Length: 330
Ligand SMILES: NC(=O)c1ccc[n+]([C@@H]2O[C@H](COP(=O)([O-])OP(=O)(O)OC[C@H]3O[C@@H](n4cnc5c(N)ncnc54)[C@H](O)[C@@H]3O)[C@@H](O)[C@H]2O)c1
Image 1: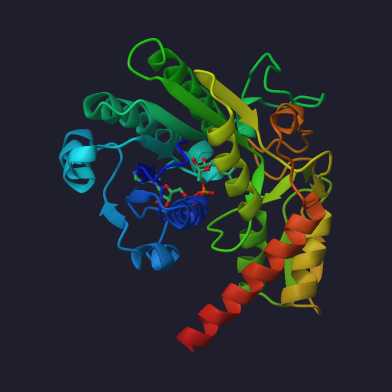
Image 2 (image 1 turned 90 degrees about the horizontal axis):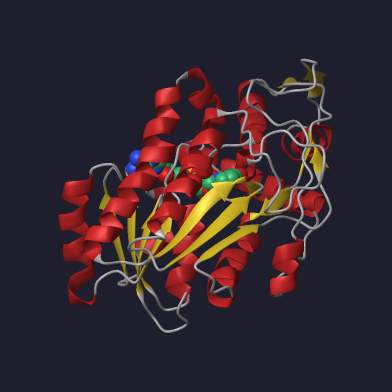
């Protein structure tokens, strides 16, 4: 990413991570064209961005390619789009397990159509939100070249297919791609994920919290503020044609049992926690993984928070947001 101000297209801008990235890109002086169909994201997430004269919001489906070409050309003006941040996807792994069309359309075809758009716009730099889900279920620490890659969810499969089609585009019109393999990301404006699920359940029944699985599922969690730091750092410091990086906390992970305990302590201290049992939360859930961020550390970036600290902070932020929403509504 250029350190000079540029015009960026950001898909999935109204989502959890996209809205934080929009705020950061604007703070760095870039012009941002945010595109989102509001399937999962909200205008409320864009409250700060919409107040900026350097932000343009396009409410549109990424897959509506010919119409988007016109819309983005108008929004970008003569200078064009210097870089695309493609974050739009189905982020609900369970929805994609129940109906594979969901991930075909929103997780794979969205990437295919972003590439079509970029080719037509003459835009040659792409940053892409991939996932640890591309690796599948492995015992060893996951490095970027771990394999064989056998995803166990449609979501992971469509993210892997997206990485493949980006790699192929580097042979033709694409000059550079950054592929970020996110762990579990948590923090304010969260739209989904274990903390949001547990808070919703507690809101419906403050006396008991049902937790899927045996509580021993253990994954690395990263706070969204550190994720955005890492994305900006990688795009300004890694200049290969294809730059794939795991982003995560360093050597730490958090159990579902810990998260359930923190959520109950902050939101409803009297609630009883009940585990449904079994090693997996749901089909397609990778119950444990261990992430190596050695490559990112060699590039010069490391997180400050442990996985548990990221969870603690996110629980506090999400509980505060839920209380503020309830106050506004009541
Ligand atoms: N949050 C995590 O823990 C996590 C982990 C790994 C990867 N990711 C990836 O990071 C990206 C952002 O995730 P998030 O957590 O912010 O999820 P999110 O659901 O909050 O954001 C995704 C946004 O994309 C939009 N969108 C979906 N399909 C679209 C389409 N066809 N056209 C236009 N907009 C569309 C949604 O409305 C939503 O605002 C996604 O690509 C996700 O797969 C997230």
